[in-house]
Length: 420
Length: 82
Image (cartoon, rainbow over all chains, first blue to last red):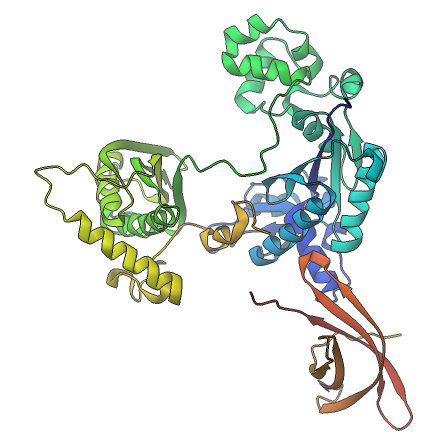
């Protein structure tokens, strides 16, 4: 039996490429954002001003994804900043995945701009894996107007490592016989699953390259890094047993957070923000017919100090009021009542889809009525739009009644695989 | 050759199988006057899906002033309502 062939396809500077392509082909602009130092950046007035994607010339100024726009502009004074357009990104991503599905019946969408394809057994259809990869890359460029990197190998890990070798618009292979030549000389930081903390530990052990990691005794790694040590040792040797997930695994939790445009310094205002987050989280839970029994609150103060607090409740719930009541209790315990708050988050986990409730004899709330109320509100919002019903406390206020950053865009498919 | 990229209003017809053909366009000229032009000939029609946006590009011959003919490119974005 022939060995498996897995492709990893990654759009180069996705948000920026899609934006540049749209501006050239749809708006008729002559300037290509990909050829000049440019970034897609969030709204600075709303304090979401970070770099979301950067062009290749911008990379030369050492601009990093996720860094504040102010710092990026200091590095490159002539930097062109364009606002994000999530609707366009979702459309581009859908078209990208559609082409992949024409090439292979087994496609796993890993993120909005990355996917794995199982190309096993397609040799007679497309030729060698490298020929197929070029065919796919060129078809995407001709049809959709943006460039991709394709990595070919026998498993997902090696395909991803191959795809990240050199960008943009390239095809790379990383088959087991090529590991020692192409992967082992790379810095250990380049290995999938090696983050900043793991890198520090590995360097303290004298491990600087992937090859050194591959040749290190797994017992030493297990001693210092526990289970992750075994995992990265396997990865360094090109071993990955994970299979392609064509259906996205179910959510382990539901959460939303928001960076507030102005620092919040009173408990009442913070609880209003938390209510708007609970509204979003509750709606998402109910839409998926899930209930959560672990609720947590997170906050980041104006000095970027992060703290979180969580608790388990007696019975799993998806009632907005009940979630908010628990969240307020947690918030009161968490906040020092002094530090101005920059960011707030509400997260739920320990999910279940059970349809019963454990009543508490001393509980005074009428949960059945609240459930019916939430269900009626969801139906109205589904039919007439999210803003058709809102709590009176949000009327004429600056705060959105259903907060959560770029949630509205997210709900159209940014975080979930897109239905074709 | 100078090219202009401007939005135009258009009247088009659909044939029996749903193909769209532009017939008449209205645009603002250099003197900021609205002018109406008839599309005399559609030379080509190209479908594209660039950036995932389904659109049609028409290369048309338009009768402008006197015997002067001009080639124009019309692009329309198709919105599919499901």
